[in-house]
Image (cartoon, rainbow, N blue to C red; front, side):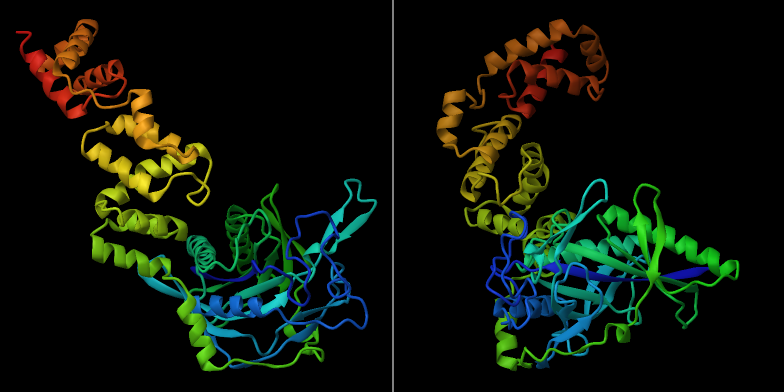
Length: 483
């Protein structure tokens, strides 16, 4: 019997505001424990929260980027629950009146067609502190630096285009992460805890319109762990259905060592949290002009840029998708175009050579030393045969890591192209004398792979400074003349 999975994420995203959500403490929880706290975020009785305007704007920007309706009227509520890491024993969140509702995020579905994953809501809330357990479990410590840091929670819609597979789940999360980084509201680092997802999973018979109990898997540490947890949970729930056993609605934990989910507790429903409006925070009214102002402040997003690059520049779709996946990369691409570089040529250089250089240096485009002007100049030097493509790779690696004067660097290192045919022929003669077996193969068949081997030998003797095409032509001529 066929089954279908219904997968919905609750993604918590730490916002990159300067200060916390309800006080002026710095939004920096990686510093010395309990160094960025005050009576408000430490939950002292009688303290009054004051809302961070930038956090509100970031939440609305996320909603606009994810095609949500922005509610003109909203308010904060107290969510009552036993939080050992929240000192006041309730969390200030939003229950019935979130800032953003009824959005979607477009992905490519398993059938190869566009698929708009439904987003039920995006609300703004405060984060909890961080519990630190001693290695021997004899004691637990609390760091309140993260307490009251602003986070948005992005909740998928299980009824309107839910995610249906591990592949779609990965695509959704990676694209969501990319969009939020694009609009500059969060670093979205999973390693630093800026981007955390709980996943709700249920299974039903294919074609059924009814929903079975769902299980929530919490505390996911990576995309890999999320994928493995979904795969295990789908199989587990199918087995329960087929054996006639009850599938209880519960919260589960994923054991990364054993790659299984284990029960933690019965899953709560909304009424279990006993929401009610926070009496210390006033209702918020957003007029349409304010919302439109925030909409205009958004950058052009990746999907739009990708389509435009393909349409305006004729770039290959695969290359355009890679470049526009990161805002800094796409902006670097556009700045380099201002220096007259051919768009198609530039995209190939970025996807092939620049990516390799960045990877080797262990840096991202925004942290490297390469300027768009120097990159354009390097490309033009190769096109004008001032340097060879082989030499350009060495230079690019240096430019990514250090600020250099390109002309002086080429001159001092003696990296200019060799144009002396006599010198090149002397190196060809050396290679032919050393590689007689390969020469015999090329003499018999000019298209034999041995030709590329011989070309490589000559390029090595010229330190990569000879033009490859010229080497090939002269080498074939030399082999033919051997008689």
